Image (cartoon, rainbow, N blue to C red; front, side, top):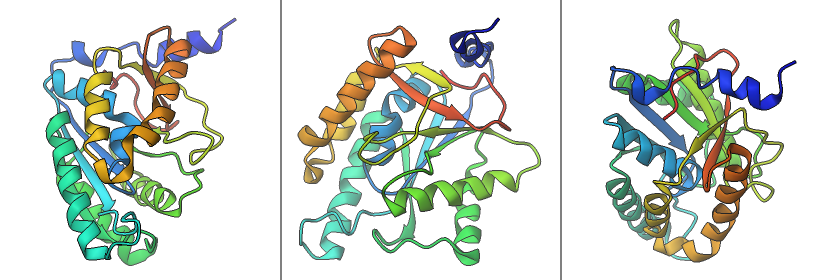
Length: 235
C-alpha cells in the first residue's frame, strides 16, 4: 500500500540540485506579483542552486492602480516587477497583454509560444487554471498550449495564489521546502508596494505555513505536476 506521501516521494526521486545540468526555468503569471507570491521561494531556491529563471508577466498590471491612469500604473508596476526580480535573481519579460482585457485566441497563442520558445525552458511554472481571475486563467491556458506543442516535454508545474480567494480546487502533488528562501520571497512580494503587500502577503504566510505542515517543513510551496511532465526537476 502506498500512502499519498509515498507517491509524492516518488516525484522527488531525482533531487534537482544533485543534477549536473544547469536548468532554464520559466515562470509565467498574469500580473506583476503573481509569480513572486505563488512560487517566489522556489524561484530563489533555483537561483541559489545556480539555475537561471525568467519570469514572463502576461500584463504589466495596468488595472491595479486604484484609479490611476493605466499607463502610469503600468510604468510603476513594471519598476516594481523589475525590483522583485532583482531580489530573486530572475530576469523579467513582459508579454504585452493588458490587465483585465487578456485574450486567448490563435494570435495570442502564437505570440506567447514565441516568447516561451525563445527561453527554451527545462521547467515551466504557471497558474493553476481553476482561478477566479480571468488573467490568471489566460496565462495558464497560453502556457499549457505552448507545452503541448513540444515533442520533448519540460517539467510543468502549476502554482497557487491566495488559495480560496483566487485559486480554487488546488491539491498539491509536489512540495518545495522554502524555509531557507521565504525571506527572499517576502522581500520580492513587498517590492510591489503599490499592491498593499502587508495585506496580500498575510494570506501567503498562512499558505507557506500550511504547505509546510504538509511537507514537514517550516515553510513550503505546493505545486500540481502535470501528469505528462517529467519528474525530479524541483529544488
